[in-house]
Length: 61
Image 1: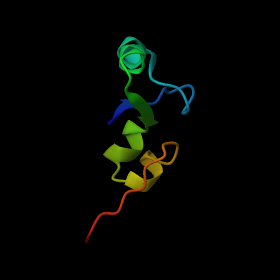
Image 2: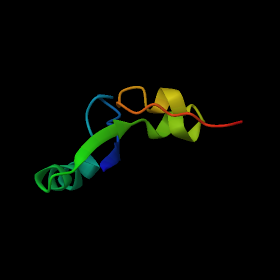
Image 3: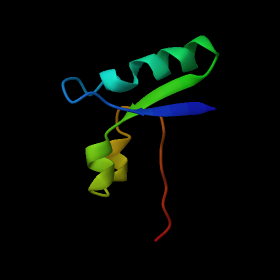
Image 4: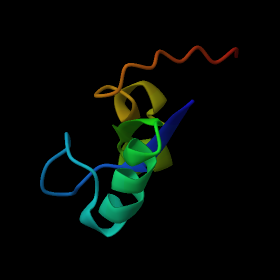
């Protein structure tokens, strides 16, 4: 299982500092983590939102 965290406004490859404690805890307990862009997701740009992660998303129309 991978746990998704919002990316930082300042660095798209880093977790938003507000969620850093949760991210560290998840990693310390054996979970994989990824970042995503909440802003892009809100604009329905799902592929762009997950661009930095290793996920590929296919959404049927």
